[in-house]
Image (cartoon, rainbow, N blue to C red):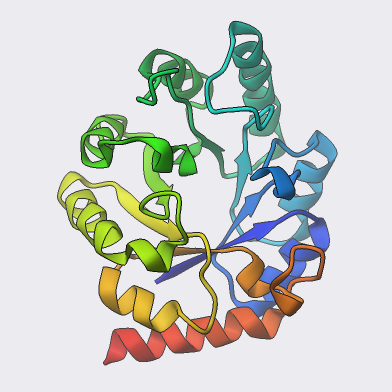
Length: 232
């Protein structure tokens, strides 16, 4: 079971590594759902530990529909991220009708050649998620889809996530379950969904708040609980 942890500072990366995380999602603007971090922060995060760092590429929080100017900014950000040694990027692009913006996505993927790619929770705004998952699986560079199965916290959509995970297994694309997961609900969630990767945000932090620091022991406890449930 792979544990990805959201980081917004280099200290978060260090704490996540200490706690036993497997991967970092690096963002800024967490109150807006996560935006592209500064180049200095990306470089700092990459150098803070040996954990692979997936960097959010999202220039604003107005929507997941992007103008040509937005696309140009995102492409330039991807070029800069590649130069830092980051492992990958986290992206998500939709059309005004709420479907995958495949044309813009393909431009991003060409720019990101050689990077690992996560399609983020823009996916949760798509009505036909199974159809979208099949489309995303056509792109070999997209390793996973981060999803809560919809707009509610992931534990409330466990049945949908299990269906997506089963289809993802068949297609060769991983489902990264996330949003609202913590030590108090992770066992039931994983038991129901059998996802192979989980995404932890405030659930790894003191008082469950992004205003507080990551507590390494919280990640260690999640790891212990996952070990128990997967061995049962």
